[in-house]
Image (cartoon, rainbow, N blue to C red):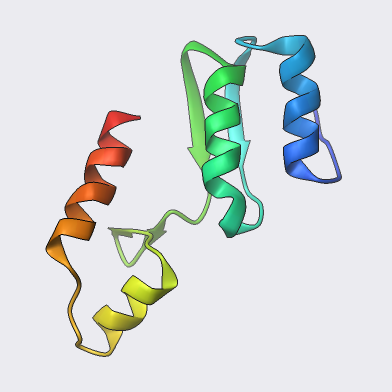
Length: 94
């Protein structure tokens, strides 16, 4: 187990310079606004067949979503189905 404290992007970039495709498991638990960046870096760090675990991605059994989408759902305002479809395709393609 390698525990690092500091800026996650900088730590992941340091790891990529030395250890691309060398980890069996990456666990992401950090500021949510950076998850896309962390995930992209972890794709490069993780071995083929490895596992990337991302904390706080489910809410009430549903995939987590941007705050503006969540607010629209909670307020009953609905959500653009095209936007949901795009997000679903992005997750599925990864």
